[in-house]
Length: 65
Image (tube, rainbow, N blue to C red; front, side):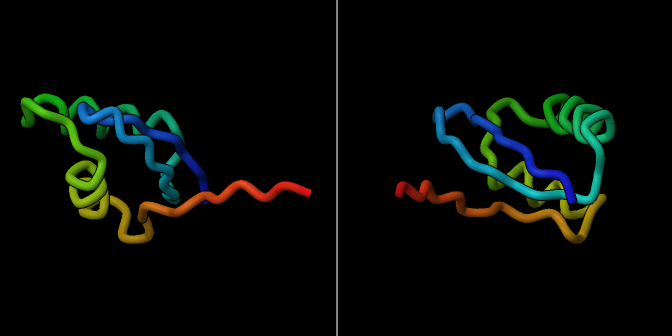
């Protein structure tokens, strides 16, 4: 799995995992951008799941010690 950090038009930060490598994610982002006027992470993940059923947003929590 590959782990990515993504910001959307709401300046919301999310992390997601995917079995697709960066080049394929970048290609799919261009396709997504061509068909959307606003970019929201959850919408992109719905789109991404059509190409990678393992893709999902993940929660990342800092741990300090």
